[in-house]
Every structure is written in C-alpha cells, then in structure tokens.
Image (cartoon, rainbow, N blue to C red):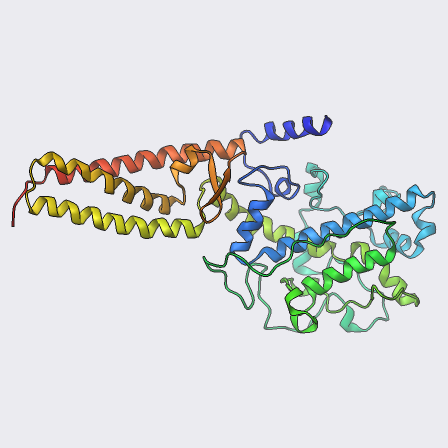
Length: 408
C-alpha cells in the first residue's frame, strides 16, 4: 500500500515536468520514457553496452549489500567477518558505510548516483557534482595495494590510440538505421539459492571486468566482450583475482577488500556520460516525437512518391482541361497523404498515432503512452502538425483548382 502511494506521489510530481535520468534508471517512469525505451534508444546507436555495464555494476553492488546484511543478521560484525574490508572502508571510505555500520560522522562515505530502491535526495545530488571533475583529473576508484605490479593499477599512462575518445564514440562499429539487433546479452542475473559468499562477490566482479573492461584481445570468447570506453584514469588493465581459487596471500586479501567498491567510479562516470549525452537526446526523441528513425525514413520515401503521383495527376487535369473542374478537389486525397508523411518525417511525429495514444518502440511496433506529461506534450505537437498538414493540403488543392485549364 505504501509503495502504491509512493508511486502515485512520484507520478503527480511529474505531472508538469519530464522525468530525470535517475527516475528512469530507477524504473519509476512509464512508457515512452521508461528504462526499456531508453535501452532500445541506446541499442539503435550501438551504445547499449554502457547501460548494460551500469546495470551490472548496480546488481554487483546490490549483491555486496545483501552479503553485508546477511553477515549482520547472523550476529557477526563486518569487522569480525571481513577485517580487511573493514580496515579498507575505514581508511578509504565505502558506498556501503551505513550497511556495514561505519560511523558516518567519522569517515567519508561514497554515495551512489542512483539505486533501484530509492531516489537520491537533493543533498546527495550536490555531493556528486564533483564526480566529473574527479573522473577527468584522477581516479576515484579504489587503489590496489602497493607491491602489486604496475600493470594491475587502474590508472595508466600508456597511450592506446585504438580506443574511442568518449563513451559514445563507437570503436569498430558504426550505428546505422538498420542496426536493429546485436549479439548482446541482458545484464547478468545472479541467482541466490544459498548464502552469498565472498567468492560470489569475486565471481560477480570477474564477470563485469571480462565483459566490459578487458580489452577484446584478452578475452577468450570475443562474443562475450563488450568493452566500453573509460578515460585513462579509470581503466582497469587486469583482474588479479580468480573466482575459482580463494585468495590466500596478504596481497590478494588486500585486493579482495576492494571488490565491493571496485567499479563504483566507473559506474559514476557512465552515469554522467549517459545523463549528459544520450539522455537529453532520448527525451527529445520520445517526449517530442513518437517515431523511430527507420519509420520516419519510410514516411519520407512514401511522402515523396505520393507527392509525385499527386502533382502528376494535378498537372494532367490542368493540361487536359478535364471537366467538370470540381474533379480537381479530389487532389486533396494524395496531397493529404503526401504532406502528412513528409511533415511526420520532419517532426518525427505521427499525429494519428498520438491521437490513438501510441508511440513506436521498434519500427512499426507501438506501445501505449502512459506518462501524463509526455502525453500532454505529444498531443500539443500532434495538434500543431495536424494544423500544418491541413494548411498545406488546402493551399495545394486550391492552387490547382484555381489554375485555368488549357488543353495541350
């Protein structure tokens, strides 16, 4: 009951505004500006791996939270169960500070940009304002223990000219209108049929590293590698642990203590990249239009073909001086379809679909518009497009009706 009331409060709060990126990631929005539609939008651009990475790291962090909660429920403290992590969290800070029982007044606790459970407060958002500056200038990821070889460090000074320069500069693949489906798995699902162990945490981190952060040439199965762009200060060049062997040496235990927070800085960077680059374009596409690029292109082609047919018919009626002259009024039929398709392409909005409450997900497949403010915006634009179409059709029809006939 409380959840339903909270959902209603969120919906009423968005009655006069577009949703934020945090709300979309938290699955609190409805079509056509929900997480599913955002994923399809990124997939058309060939950049869905960034969102997959964010979701997988979110699940990894949720798994770590569940582990810490299980430990506390068992009656043991984190300090007793995992002293290396406790020491690391006290010195470096951790996003799990409140879960593991660290004193929030005595240390710096990292905060997450979003979670699947709750929205950030305004103070949290202000605390995260410096994330971009940190990511650009230095690493915010946990440092590996001194004594480990340099190639295991997150920061690297060795240039790699083969990498893209931004998360949305695609390496080795160019998004096209017809790139509808790629070989990409959904975010990793980790079943919980038994108590979570630290080896499970290592396995989760290992999967994320080899899927998203390991260079393609270092992965046995290239089909499972979807390397994403990260700035040099956030790159991780090796994963020194193995899920098949329990860490035994002091250096391995020290590295293992970093596993819960290992990808947090990279996750923050991807969040900011999506929020500042892809998300505004997604809102423009879905809150002010309801067509996919392929569907808009098909409308352009149909509109030009039908307009050519309509003009050919109109000139035939004029130069053959067909009587009665009132037959020319039937030209409004091809002109209506032609102008409707052309204007729909220009605005990437089909007013008929909007009036039916539909928005395209993939070419020629639709779902119902359920976000109230988006529905209001689309209705307003649909009315404007309809008026524009009516004006053009009326003008064309009257012009060809008024032209005197002259039989050649």
